[in-house]
Image (tube, rainbow, N blue to C red; front, side, top):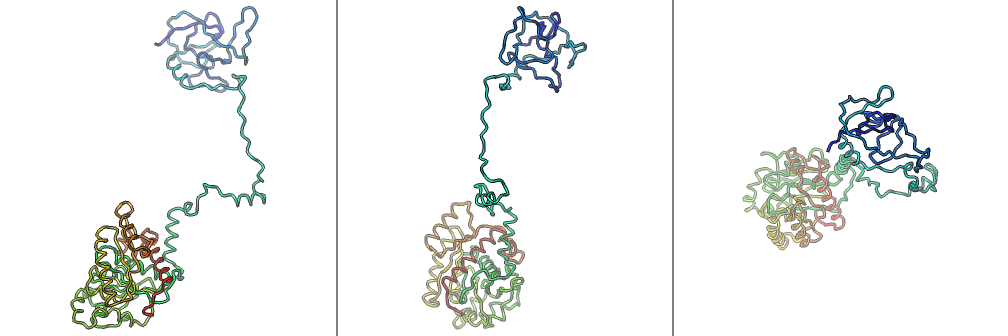
Length: 454
């Protein structure tokens, strides 16, 4: 309910006969808020000293004693009568208050919503809480004792260098580490040439991508590497930006026409320690022509053995089949590197590949060994990738590299620019993963040296 009544209070107006509205504030009230030197009106029932208010005399001449010296103001009942609307004004002429109308119920509602905190002046017995005192026994900053203490103390929240550096700085550091602009030999070189055959009869598992990126990573870090593209599609030649159009001397001439390998090998632009033997479309008919050739299974092995120079690594990129070209690669190699896609189909054809490797070992190349398994196209968001990884590691054990190649778009973009991912985007996750795989292969070769093509 809204009450527009008024009452007479001589303590507010200073006169006994002046009408005062119940909604009228004290003389220092202003519509724009409290000004300097004015106090805020206390809620009903609270006590406060109002500046400028005239206190009436107390009957009997005895003033009641109130703790704190604050006199409560008790409104007296008065008759209710209508008052005309008066314009809002902060002060009145002649020291008399001009009444101002406002909504009393709304004022009471908003004032009661804010809790009133007692102050030390209004509560005599209140004592402030003691402030905790910090230990000041530590030596001042800049003194010898403070320097030693600061050096020994490390906050738990102090970030490490990896966490403190921004992502772009970390990517730049990885790029410098992978590109190795100084040209120093940072990866160990094997005592003798390691001939590795990258084989898997299933297509699309990353054989060519693995061959190119491992070769570039090893060559950038001081190893002499030769890549033999034995796939008629010539994708490894494309990834290394080596011409492989019709009419270019290629590996077909070495297999069919017995052309020396040094006359066919081409240097890779921008990487001084890397050479590539390209493959053209003519290689597609090599399997049919090799049927009538004497010692057809060992043609590539003799060509590599006759090379006058010395290589630390020879990578042979095999086609996705188990024909004569793959058999030539298995006979020429000492080790087999099998890239396995983290999917079920890759596991299904793995048994057949292992059986063929065992047949070649028994009849043609007793030194052949499956030395390295590399998991490619790993998608950590799927449970299937984890299941395939666990099955492969349980079956092959230490032959599986700890480095895993994830799905990365940079790896797929690099061949369109005639580059490997190591030079296209050396700071990407794909380049970092292949770099770790190459480093692991190099360290394994030093621990277990192999002897062939010295």
